[in-house]
Image (tube, rainbow, N blue to C red; front, top):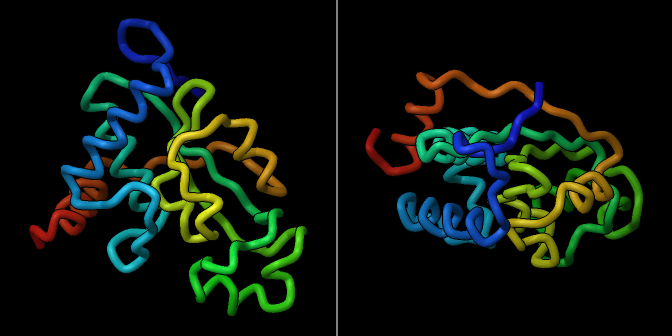
Length: 158
């Protein structure tokens, strides 16, 4: 079952989530609004961030999207432009997938900039995420052992 409230029972505000995202970005030297796929893809970043929130007492879920609908930005990751070919800058399903963290009515998207600078805002409503993807749904979270290895890799400890 999906849940997204802190342990006190209150749904976190956007401002509170922005604070967590800034702390996470500082802690992992990961600039918000960027996308360094060499350091971590959306699955890695979302899993590690979800553990980070859980450790702070905030519960959330991983939300996945399949089939990116909006046109990619001209500054999108070149790999996505190459893979989507003629569809890249047109509206319609491009066969791309994405994973984010959902907390209440908000999505925390640490790697959205890979689709272009128009998508770099790391926190936005779930309804916006759902409007960008052909299909959306919850996806399984990796176990803590895997996420601890991911966290160590992100920090350069391995």
